[in-house]
Image (cartoon, rainbow, N blue to C red):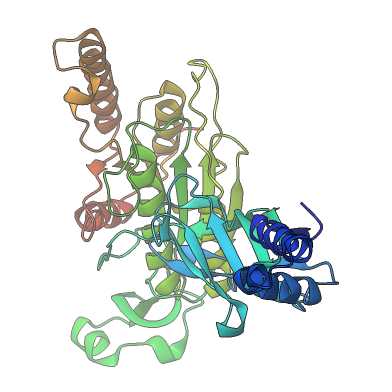
Length: 427
């Protein structure tokens, strides 16, 4: 409704007041005027204060993005507000959105401020928030405008990074100055070792105590000051389990996205160059980069992930786009052969790859029990998956379940030691 119309209360007051006045004149009874006065006065005041302008509703959320678990106040601006006395708002509640009050119904006098409702988001993604129905009432409840629908505003909800910290070094730093030392010998300040003098060595690198003791010139070698290249690969081909939001049970994709966010934030904070590859709808790619702005780009890309939930072609060929020496984190439930094959190809090329299993614990009771058809099929699928992971581990690729802090420390230490050894790469 886009115009002001009389309320039923005003219509009743006018009808009763008119009937009383007509009756008083017809019957010559002034008592009827006194009896109808409580209806006559509000009817006259309501007609006198009839709004003359057409209001316009402008949603005012006040934020451009949120994190899981955060909330906002759903503001609303009424322009112009001439003649508006009372505002009633009824908010819609889409999935993974909570309201305060839970009913989503708020109202109050405009002179006391626009009534606001609290909106909270419980899961990452692009969430439509702020959709509501708004009704305005004029002075003395004489005229009503609306209810009028206010469209939702899509707000990107960034994943809440899982608790994660690592004290291990990346095994193959490759870039420009960063936090992790390089395994390459070059110009730097960190001691690497002592070797015999060779043509081209700087004279200031000569270590005289060792040279005098051995009888031949010895020079000090240092580690090149280079940072780490880290590629985070996210498997969004399917989602297993039901997501209960940030405080509820986590689906496989919840674990994947939150773990990817935690890994990306950790490595960006310590100065590494981080890239992202999303396998699934959209095939998103974020090149290697550093800094807070790049971290926001990574988080925004993760928030736009939508699970494919379709059968993946078993013969499909995936190219993860790994360039140069970098550490590759593959976050996946590892249920699709193309993802396993692409990971194995990287391992055969000598790229340090860490597979982080984000399948999580799945309750067979949700499938009808372990003896149901669905439960039996899932158990058989797990056997096939375990076989694939065993073959992948046989190639030298570590597979670790996501456990939060310290998940990859031991694996990175082992990869760093392996990186010191000569490698043969398959071309």
